Image (cartoon, rainbow, N blue to C red; front, side, top):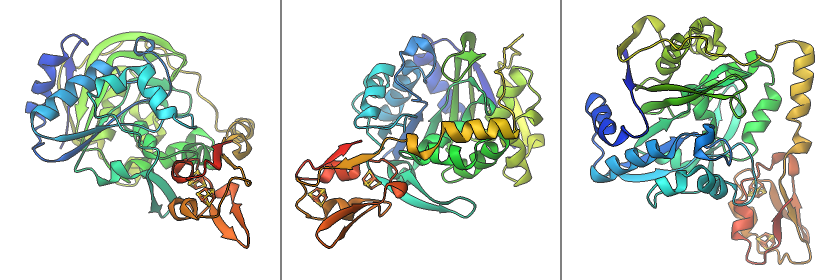
Length: 350
Ligand code: SF4
Ligand code: SF4
């Protein structure tokens, strides 16, 4: 059975509520490496409701530290570039809410082979943790209608890996088929959807805030999203990523049990969904075309051919050939690991 529990909540209740959540969904945190993955889509203030509220992050960090766990907090934002994760962390309030446990997870990717997708660069901090807690935001999305637990795990991908998949799988149907594959790379051990203030309409960045006053919690993220859909009266069958997951035997709707303070949110505004037709496909292909991704540039005059960047590059996009450093732009995922190790300052963001 996939238990989903819905809790009535405000951001001011969380100090009292979070211990209750972990009584209902117990873990042994002592000496465990716990990774907390909020939604840090972009550098927006907490009150804009685009990203997971920092008060939720803070109460969870506090609780796990008190239980003796080792905590890390981070995400791969949608934009790439030097220091972007820190900037997003600061603006969203999540860095401060992490009580010194915020970390840049864009710098140490590891390649994971997914049979249907090939090799993908994933943040190693997420792959290496003992317990993964996912904290998505309750929002709308033009490709998936709703974005919550499953879509939040798309953020385990580093750098341009995300737009690259958007480019390869541009339409709602194609993109939805990818989401469960990413989710299954590392299933979260618990998902807590921040639905205290959700977003309707033109989400995930420019919608209208909607007070829902609920957290949706489950060990099964598919079940969380299924319940989220029920709350806003969207037939879960309309969520193609859930259909795909069900087809693959990854979750069974009939096994979901719902407890707690379930409500229906009346007249919740859905986004204008992008179509699966050829026109939409061409537009989305253009939007995510690889020439648009910022990557790196090499100042050849400064390079001393020490090969440190070659050794650290997770995608083998750099190599020393003859008397020069060669760069394969198409393989680069813009993780900027090379820039970090270069002792000569020869690598810069493009
Ligand atoms: S070239 Fe640099 S930025 Fe690109 S993938 Fe390799 S290490 Fe990352
Ligand atoms: S790390 Fe810097 S100096 Fe060394 S090979 Fe790479 S670009 Fe050149």
